[in-house]
Image 1: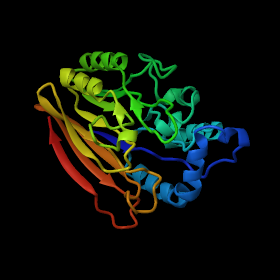
Image 2: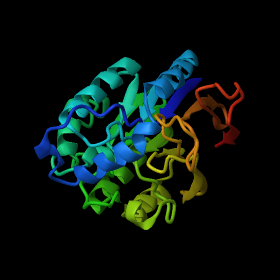
Image 3: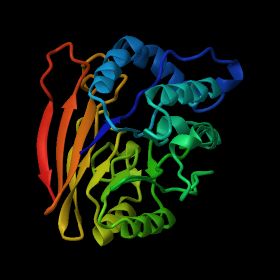
Image 4: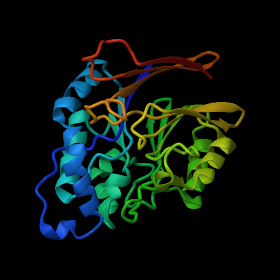
Length: 295
């Protein structure tokens, strides 16, 4: 059995000290949002017990589907690298960039360079946003990481998935047929899963790759919600699963932080997957999701 943990939208806090020139961009809106909103909802007091509970369940691999930072400041990107190191090292952790990690032009390039060991493999080295998707193999498990992060205008949080990446995704899905293929992306590849200004542009390209080659699981973040959707893919319904923001500690409109746990096992007849989800545990120890899938 292979056990995989999934977290997203960590938004490591607090914000480092900013210099005036760093606010002369889209960052000014994010900084105000932090001061008036996020500052009071996220923090290590909430994140640490969630991670402790996740680690106690001994996952074989952990996936972080983007938004490790708030404003993609250089100090935040460096801190996010230390955070990834703390989760278990590149052989046990896979990561993506999210829209907050691409907050201003050039920031996603810096994040990729800093986090490269966590989003590359010998087969598919990632050097820029144009190099995605990557493929990482864990025995019969294939982890395919896509990129939707790109700098956008103020008040926009859209993602982009273009034809070139879709073609590469289709090739990797075909190459890994017979394994358990897990596709990761930050923005949900589902129409109307988010408000218009936060949507993924190029959903049809992503879904066409899945429809053509199939997949066993798609994981995403971005919505800060416990999403469940499906995509028709090569004669099967492919689960598309999101997770609430790991760093969120106050339940108002969005739930407190959670992690997803997937127990995947190869049977004689095919694959079986058990999905459970947990919060940091102070409201009780029972799983918040408990579903089984047979392939």
